[in-house]
Length: 224
Image (cartoon, rainbow, N blue to C red; front, side, top):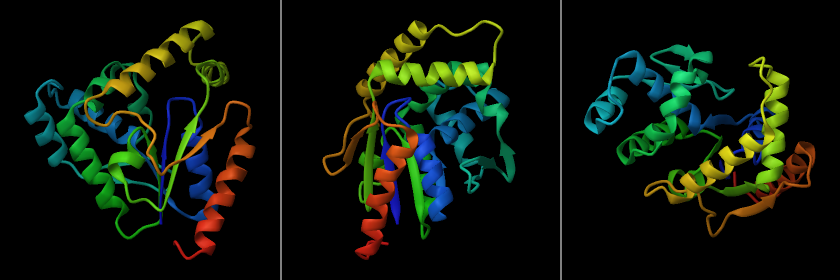
């Protein structure tokens, strides 16, 4: 079974996808981690991200895989904290917008997923990567709510002595939403056959309970 989840940043995709993977025994695929891995490799090997042919060659000379928890392996080596460095953060959006790289990453995800029960989340999973997924979900929330969630996450992580400003986070989310919607390839949009869930007024547990019922109903009807 393929479960595909799309939605904007802060909508709850990653948390719900992990919960599905843990409770149903599915492989969890976070497409964003793969784009981060490609970006990290480009920085490590001094490959110019604007050179699409060099970037394609970079991807093709490495082997990518996912661990059950969604962590990415490259050539058998686990990449974790390296993917969240400021250097990767600075250009990963640009790298993920390159059509040729999106095609390469999508091919990798499909190859890894073949013959497996998978829950995958990102921006174009339901529309491009797995348009034939048995279950398609679009998790959304208002920009204000998503900013509050990210604000609480950053406070809990204590990654800096300077506390984050919720207004800055909200503006960044709105800017990212606009960029995601305007991409020429892999734009964020709601698939016609996706189940839309507004999570603004729901706890993560309440969202999961709704998703759980959807999955159990599909499995009961022989869609697995």
